[in-house]
Length: 372
Ligand SMILES: *Cc1c(COP(=O)(O)O)cnc(C)c1O
Image (cartoon, rainbow, N blue to C red):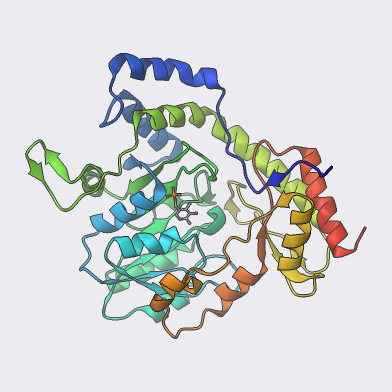
């Protein structure tokens, strides 16, 4: 009999009874969407938790990214410089918004876009930059916002991983023109499906509020070509029940991060992720496995699978390696991002992961390394 499966993540869920009063109130009002009490209360609670003034909950992070891009009113087909080392939705949102992705490389010593590579990718058609705070690690927003100012570019941060993360100096979600968070079930904070747009101004928030509601300004007036990106009352009620629990969950993930650190320290061929220099939300444990590790990264991935431990190669392949995205790859080499996509293995980490299960993951890694 094999051990029970351990997955890379597992959604945290509030006690069901915490949700019932809010569900009863939805049932009583029979208002299930279109700006009811739940969404209004969730929007306020979320803004307070994240310390931002202009926030719009959405049906998911991908539509939220598309609406943030549309709110920038860029010329059709304009270029958006982005990272190849991300979940595919970062680039697909750019394409669905009718814009052209241009890939820059990641930094040699980080998972995020290299500001120098962004600057080198700027052309006369560049209109925006869409960086990702990969694994919730802050991009160099000072350098990126400075490039944007000098070249008159919009900046939309894909902060899908960054709920609860910040720079030591704060203000992560205030960088650029917009930031977008995902509340998908695999993310640190979840509403099953969901997301939000954080805008830099009341005017930009209003644009997003309209875009997610077909562009309606009032009953008879439409501005721009909107879409249906609204969050339902159910998902908002769930989000309200999740908010009081998230700090404790992040704290538990912080403990797990340090347990991994202790148990995996000193194994040849492994580089452990550091939480130094920023406030982590501890929702990813991106281990780098180089060629000196027996079997390399993919060998370790397979060895763990055999033990019923399902790690993820986030992000492999690189987005421009998918056939339908390859046409957008310019001749620019992406050596740093390519290396990351060949080396990184994200280990299981989530609030309900037990110490015993973490120890089992570590034993399997030690065994693959030949150290036990
Ligand atoms: C999850 C994710 C998205 C998409 O969010 P959804 O809520 O699943 O639509 C976008 N970008 C990144 C980097 C993600 O990890």
